[in-house]
Image (cartoon, rainbow, N blue to C red; front, side, top):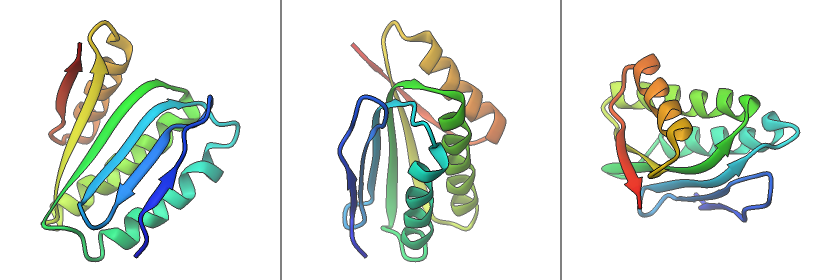
Length: 125
């Protein structure tokens, strides 16, 4: 299995998913014109990765802005992670947010409550 790395652009986040370490990072802005095209490869990669994941995986979100189209796909990523957790595949979800960015923090809390999964919130100072 190959790692997936996507350089950030002004409208898409950096994606750095490393199967050998189990650290899966999304960082930046997510406002692609067609979020389905952008996120389909990520969802497919996750499906393949979780067929034989690391003993413990970490999913990191360090997002600056997420539009509504991207929000649906991030929610889908989290739903899948929750399903994998229920299958016994340990994944720690870390939600990084700027100290003053209440909207990103609130979005992470919304996902946590909606999916009923633990999310570790990490304030960036």
